[in-house]
Amino acid sequence: MSKIHNFSAGPAVLPKEAIEESIDALRNFAGTGLSLLEVSHRGKEFVEVMDQACASVRELMGLTDEYAVVYLQGGASTQFLMVAMNCLQNKAGYLDTGTWASNAIKEAKLFGEVSVLGSSKETGYDHIPKGYTIPADLDYFHCTSNNTIFGTQMQEFPDSPVPMICDMSSDIFSRQLDFSKFDLIYAGAQKNIGPAGVTLVVIKKELLGKVNRVIPTMLDYRTHISKESMFNTPPVFPVFVVWRTLEWVKKHGLAEIEAINNSKADLLYSEIDRNGLFRGVAQVEDRSRMNVTFDLVDQQLSPAFLECCKEAGISGVKGHRSVGGFRASIYNALGLESVEALVDVMRNFKA
Ligand SMILES: *Cc1c(COP(=O)(O)O)cnc(C)c1O
Image (cartoon, rainbow, N blue to C red):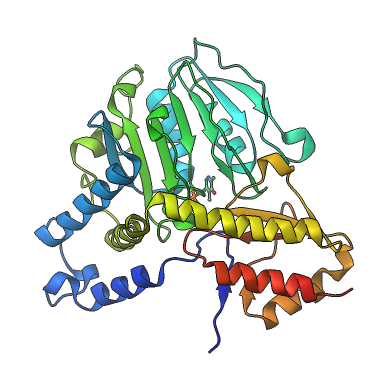
């Protein structure tokens, strides 16, 4: 079978090694003679996996002991409510930069007042709002680093006078960042670091314990921090795959990963800008280096273009149903050669 270039937005492409190692663990986990799926999560072999998966996040982000790292279930969507339930007492500020951001706002409103500090909704979320100020009386400021559906990405983060919380689901570990600027970071694994079923949450511990509502045990970050993500049965398989994926990220280092991601994005955007048949969807300065949204100037050609993609083994480039057009998700594990294959199709596509 010829190679399939996987541009899916999520679940998405993972490092081949991480997949192979995970298959091995399904057959014989850490020399136990048992499948990873059959052993107790409290056994020393799995506890070691969980410890390593947390340690890798600390290492990659350069976190101090002020931060806790936990793996939770319920996806990034559950974080929309957990963030507010655990941290919103009176009022929080949110940036409305897309579908996921607006879902986060909707959930936060269940727990307190939400001030939308900036929104790009009016222009179809084609840019990141700028020039907003973050009032100092907020409990926190929430932003979405990369807008998976619309293809925009925050290139800079504000110096926030209040704790900064960020949904990094679709660009986590894709670039070097000063992670110490953030007080809480969350990411559903299935975009850039693993399969669906586990969510990474990094929390500065001093952020917690400041609201006076009753928080159900499972939804209280402190429960999971104190039990090192083992309060209840963790999703062992997704955690294992995340661990192996993070090992791969560490092997390359964030600097190298960022450089490759930049070359992939530059190659694709320059073809979109050069080739008269296509146009970009997001405003140039806010273009995402993870999810590249574009369209055909003549949309009637879409089925023909998708057919050419299919013939070249290019999968997953159809745009999100709410935006249309095309979206090429070029996450960490997607090689430059896959972007070259897509660019070749675009070059050879003649009206
Ligand atoms: C995919 C995505 C989500 C939703 O993640 P789930 O794990 O499916 O709940 C939230 N935020 C962003 C930025 C995403 O890309």
